[in-house]
Image (cartoon, rainbow, N blue to C red):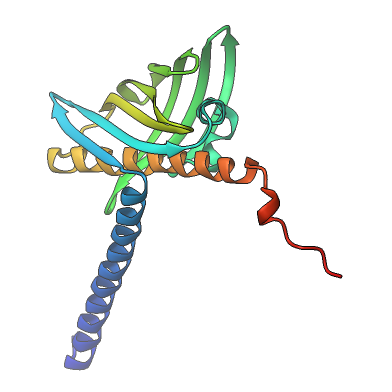
Length: 211
């Protein structure tokens, strides 16, 4: 390889690394702003071959709207990052069967997810989820809703996930922490988006008609 070509390759690699750093920094900044706004926190730790994850955030919205968004199973893929499909298959009382597919990723590692889960609803304060079948070895978790003020709630999700394939230990925990965090914040953002468009406009906020 000539010196000119070698120099071009080096410049190209440096450009890619620089672009990656810029994109990563922008995402981190956006994530920090979202975390501050919602008093967001996340914890993740290995438990044998599984990963235990707990996330929480404050949500400003009516309880009924929070509940209807959490249980909007046929439309979750429209606002949950990395989720490609979500479909209500069957419902019997407060128990629903949902088919979901998507992926988890970290850096260049990409792991597809295709599961059928059973959801048990406890209106309007908790939702339990357990795996029926799919390419995960284990999936169990639950949402909890706790009122802390007028239309102000703490929303929590905690669960245990075990991938169906071997993932390097140095990747598994960070990957699950990242993807669960993004999906949880996607839910929180959608709840507050819906709340914003359903709040009636006060007389003082209405524009004065032109004379």
